[in-house]
Image (cartoon, rainbow, N blue to C red; front, side, top):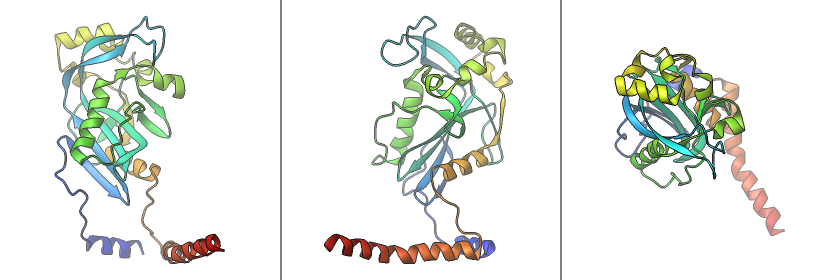
Length: 252
């Protein structure tokens, strides 16, 4: 049965996007209404807003921030969208080399707003991305996600709601990232020093992360056995009858 479905799929015509693949998107995979995009940002020094050490609040109103110039390795952002909109399944990882295959491994970040949460290895908080992405073009969706990632403030929102962020748990892996001041100083000395940091392995490949997010966002795998296919066909066949029965009950 599995081979039969695979043979049918191989003969099907699939068009994942109706537009050019956005710049920086390295992999994409769709199943039903869910599409997972993998974005890769190149190593560079970025200006970010970071929660100040003396901030009276961990996030939100009353929180104080400082501007920092920080060097980053390859930054991998993975987002699952349903019908073009956010699903809550979004993750962020590091790498010290470019993505090449789905078997490439991932590394944990050292960022605020990233934590092991919501059944995800490195959940990325996009709670303040209020714009509805569904009506946007794919290029604009990617731009909005990237803009929010780097223009929003890095704070302790994930720690308040979901436990320790990776900023707290990864500060001992290298003296150059033990504090924001140390990170800034190392960035001034060598813009590519993060490529030499021994970031903690996530023990997860990019393909495994994409598959888990497709499943988590509610897009089931195709049937692999005859009973699975029979149940699916039964559900499809029963749907029109159920709608008719519901309409009759409303008229009565």
